[in-house]
Length: 217
Image (cartoon, rainbow, N blue to C red; front, side, top):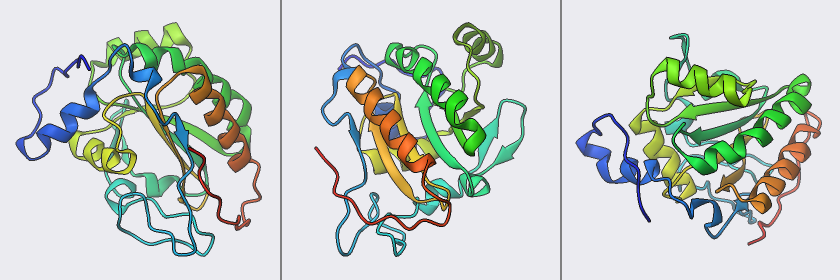
C-alpha cells in the first residue's frame, strides 16, 4: 500500500498506529470487509475489547473515544458523549484522500435526508489541515455537516476499534451512544451498506432496544 503521510509530526507513543491510519491509497476503496455491524453474541464484547455492553447486545463506544476532546473548525471543543441523543456517523477523512472525496456525496445525502430526525455526520479531519483548505474543499463538495479535527491519540483509539489502516472509515452510533456499525472503504457496495444501516438505526424509536444481530461478512 502506497501511503500518504500527514504534514504534522506524529507523537512517538502512537507513531505506528497513527501513520497507518493516515494511509490512503488507490486500493483503499476495495479493501475486504466493506461494512460491518458489530458482531453480537449472548455475551457481547465491545469491538476494542474494553468497556461494557448494554442489555440490547450492542456495545457502548470505548471511553477513550467517547470522552476524547474534539476540536471544531470554530475552535470549540466537545466530546462524542456530548452528542448522545443523536444518531452519529463519525467519518475519518482528509482532503487529499481520493476515496474520501468519492464517499462524501453519500454523506451529504444522508445528512440532508436524516438530519431532521436527529442524525448527524461528523467529519473528523485526520491531518489537521489548514482551515482555508478545508473550507474550499467543503464548498466544492457542498458539505452540509460539521467538520472537526481528530488528534493522533483519538485516531489511534478509533483504529483499535476498526482494525483498518486507512481512510475513509466511519463509525455509526445510535442515540444511546452504542456502536452500531464500522464501515471501511468507499466502493459502491460499502456506501450502499452504510446508507442501509444508517436508515435502519435512524428510524428506530429512541426507546427501542433492538435484538442482537449477527454481522454478515
